[in-house]
Image 1 (tube, helix red, strand yellow):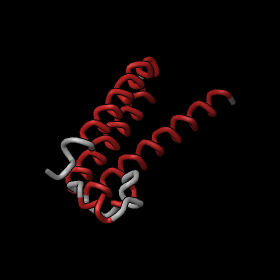
Image 2 (image 1 turned 45 degrees about the vertical axis):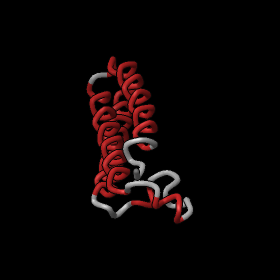
Image 3 (image 1 turned 180 degrees about the vertical axis):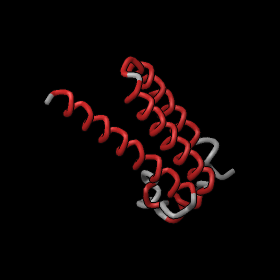
Image 4 (image 1 turned 90 degrees about the vertical axis):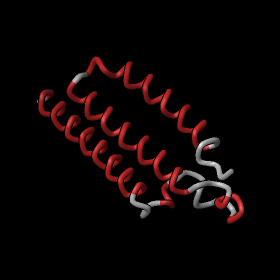
Length: 105
């Protein structure tokens, strides 16, 4: 019984990772700008201060990276601490890049 619960949790983790990757691809294709945090609710002037293509690239990259890391962690459980560090570093880099590289000059 305990072994089957473990299998189901791995399936759920892989499904979640797949959903995250698919959402990243949707954003990258330009069909999911409303998924970019804060962009949809920003004023028109604020939205125009950002390069939407660069925001899409950053959001898509983060989603795909997180999805891949989640899939890896299913097969290598000792990867969790490394994965956590990578995700935190990626989140920090993403915020910095969204406020520098993705800003219109």
